[in-house]
Length: 508
Image (cartoon, rainbow, N blue to C red; front, top):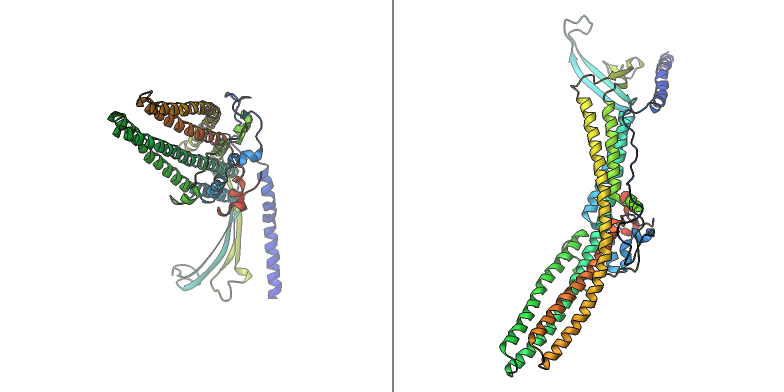
């Protein structure tokens, strides 16, 4: 009889739960058909002219760059040391690790926001000893008794006006903005490593030129000292040659300081302690050589490629969704609440009996009717923030255009300057040789030799700096074009940790 009674109770409970199941199936379909309040985001695209303002000269070509050349642009320098340093930077740079952490946080926040679309289920229980009032008209009045309770509580907000879905849109757009930010950090990192590496090689060559000039000036000083002792020249020539020699020697300390600072900066970019790259960078290598041709594409392609513009566009999308979430606060919120559990005064015999079961289910509503215009003011606030985000997007586009145009011009013009300096150095070397030769023959004053040597050192130093600047201008140009993140960007997004580069690399 007990089994038959329990079976009847189960059937009775199933009949009462059947409408709940039907409602659970109907509600998602109802929600999917509801219109979300607030503005829908319309994707904006950067307005770009058909052609660059800068002239396509000195190897620049307005043709579409090859994907592999753009995604690993540092390989165009054909420098194995630079390539190794770029790979080490991806594994060790702390700014990149921080950006990757922010991306993962954004993904987690999106998951948290999406969970609001689904029902929530909580469990609870209570055991307590209690005494009822003696004035209670009950058989238990004034007696001590135990109380046992175990229950599951469920709640579900029906997103009829799209407030939660707008929040999910916001979280998704912020996630995509974080991805773009990671790509932007990666783009800057690749360029910074190349720029500091080029600076190291430039300082090394400037030091080598300075030391060569010191050797030449030492010989001139020794010559003048010998001629002075022989009575062929006066002391003025000796002191002038010594002044020239020591002036050149004084430049060595400044150049060594710049070289050490560039090496230390490069080490920190790789997430290493200063001085960690001393062994790898001590052998003097040539300043990276530029390729004969550089394809830059058209403005529209570069604008779409740049991660900072993508970041600004996604921030605008997120802010647009926030207007909808704020607008939804004007409308009522509908909820489904339900509870099922067991309740008894005797745990040993009654608690798990079918008679101890209880449940309830029903809808609920809440509505923010009056909050001193705070809700509408919040809509106005989010709308104004959207305008600010749109301005920030337009500003990002303008600054991107400026950066690319400047980089194109600097790359071409610095090559022209380098060519002129090469001719000037050739002339200065010939001038210095002729001046020394004629001075030895007693045909000219020593002042002409001093002037020739000083001019030669200055021009050789300028030429070396110009060669480094040409290579640096190319690195800045590739950064401005949005190159460098494509090779590592997506694998980094899904990496549990920044580890072996070989496991992260892919060919787009």
